[in-house]
View 1 (tube, rainbow, N blue to C red):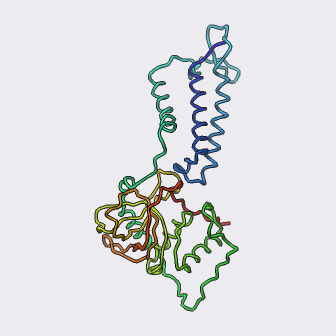
View 2 (view 1 turned 135 degrees about the horizontal axis):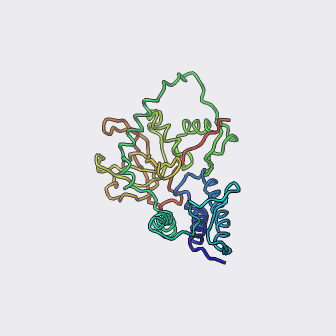
View 3 (view 1 turned 180 degrees about the vertical axis):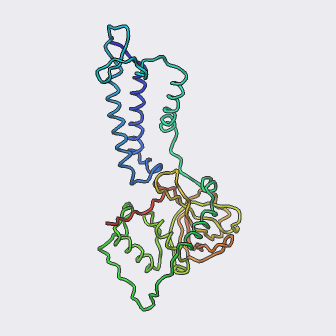
Length: 309
């Protein structure tokens, strides 16, 4: 029997990837890297790595061949091997390849998952992103029909459970119910599951929501151009994974703003109003009550998916 060290290393790497993915799912940290709707694919990848590991283990020990020359058999013909069976001498090229493959394993096991914060928000553009979002909304905005003689639609409470926090897939009717609930609510509660949807609606027509009470939570972000008593109550929205994370949030007015450090998580109640920042009209929250909170277990937001059929 011959022991092949390189084949054993490859088997170990496959097992390590499987264990790492399983660990991230077991601890709940996977949602700090990807949108939860892709968790099924990630779990499948973990199982696939495990299957490949079991196949690879059969190559670690082999029976020695009597022939002096090793050949590959393809289509019933003998050919000298031109590819690596894992028994060729270890060289610099292989070392570099193994280092590249092992690096994400080392960081995944040894380094804790870092949550995106104010420093990343600044690198992604900060308030410039928010003003661009508003500009894009104004370009896409269509004239609203005259509803002065139409009655407000009645919300069917049996159609959608507005209190659920984990469902991210809605039917078209359920989605319409969410929007109607927003339009008819005197107090806007920005729960995580509907945060991005309500945020888009408010950005599209600020005047429609001016004077409404709003409740939400987020982390403190600051940048030049804000007044002494202003901050941005921010969240990160992940569509697919952290690589495409974008900042969304509201400029907020709070007398104690200057004493709050960036990345401090707070929960606030306030009144929606409008302000002008760099020539763009943006919503602003005039905070009436607030409190510091711990960073949520799920700090990111994810967009709602609407089923067409």
